[in-house]
Image (tube, rainbow over all chains, first blue to last red; front, side, top):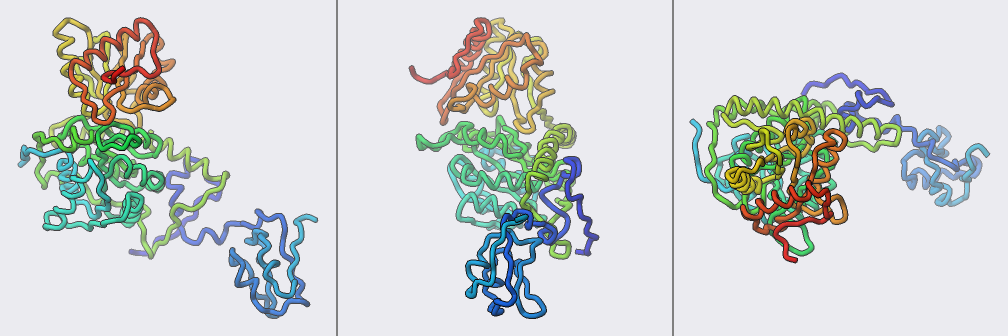
Length: 102
Length: 391
C-alpha cells in the first residue's frame, strides 16, 4: 500500500478529536513521550570513576542510557524514570542517585 | 431467488456469516454455541466458504485473533457462550476500543455456579458496558437477519464498532425453524467490502492501543461513549435499508398489540414469542394489554422506549438474569433509569424468571401480566420478584 502522509493528532485532543483515539495514525510515538517527569531521584555519573563497562547501559529497563563521545555512559534525562538500577549495578559506584530539586 | 429452509438458530447464524463471505473465523467451542462453530468449520473445510479458520486454545485467544484479523482488514466472525464469554471479557473492551467491526453470535447461557449448560441472559448482561453493539433475536429468522445486517452496520464508516447478536441457548440455537435465506447476489450487492481507515499496514505504521495517562484517557472514553450512542440513527437507517431489500423490517423495540394498551409487557429475546400468546389470550378476555420486544440493548434506544410506552399506564418488565444485589434485573434497572423523570405517571414493575433454561409457558406470562399489574396498582415491588421459581 502507498505510504500516506503521517499526521500527528494534537497532543491533548478534545473528545471530538479523539474518535479513533486508540489508533494513533503514526508510529514511534513513544519517542516523544517524556517519562523523565515521573522521576524523583536522578542518576548522576562521576565520569572520573566510570570504567566504561556498560553495565548501566545493559541493565537500564528504559534503554535510556547513552554512551558519550569519551566512552563514558549517562542517562538521557528526557526518558530516565529514576529507578536507580544503574546506580545499583555500577561495579565502581560511579553513579549516585540525587533527589530532583535538592 | 430467496429460499425457505429449515434451520436451527446456530445454523442460521453460520449461514449469515457464510453469505457475508467472512474472511476469518477464530473460535473455541462451548455449549450451546458449538453448532455455530462446527458448521463454520465444515463450510470452510468442504469449500462452501473461502476463509481462514483459526482453531485457538481459549476464548481469550479467540477474541484476540479476531482483534488481529479485523485490524488487518479481514471480515471477522466468532461465537461463544457463558463461561467462554467470560474468558474473552477483557478482550471485548480492546476490540470495541479499537473500533473493529467484529461480529459475534452468542448462544446465551446461564453462568456457574451452579454449573450448567442451559439458557438465560447472565452472560449477555455482563457485557452491557463493553462498548459492543448488542441485539437480541427472538426467533431463527431474526438470528439470520440480525447477523447479516450486523456486518453491514458494524462496518459502516459512521459506526465501526463490534456487534454481538444474542440468541437463546438451546431454545433458539438448537431448535429448527423455517428461515428465509436471500439470494447470494442480493447479499453481495448489500454488503460492500470491509474497509477500515486505520487497517494494519506495514507501509503506513500506526500506533494501536497505546497507554493513555489521565490527561488523554478521559477524552478518548468520552468520544467512545458518545460514538456508540451516535450509531443509533445509523442502525435504524440500515435496518430500514435491510427491510427494503429483503422484505423484513426491524426496529430497536417491536410493539405488538401495544396501541392504546393500558398495560405493556416488555420482554427480551425468544420468550417474547411465548409472551405474545399470553397477550393474545388476555386481549381475547378483554384486557387492555400489549407487548414490547426489546431487540436493541446497546446502544440503548431511549427515544424508542419513550415512544413505545407513550400511551401506557403500567409497564411490566420481564428479566432473565439476576443482578445479585442490584435493582431486580438488568433490563428492569435500565428501563427504570431510562424512564425516570420522563414519565412520572408510568408505573413500572419488574419480574424475574426463566433462569438456566427453566421453561416458562403461556400461563406463566399471563401470571406475569397479572402480578405486574398488581405491583403497579399497589406500588409495592419486592426487589426479587420471580415467576416459576418454587417457594
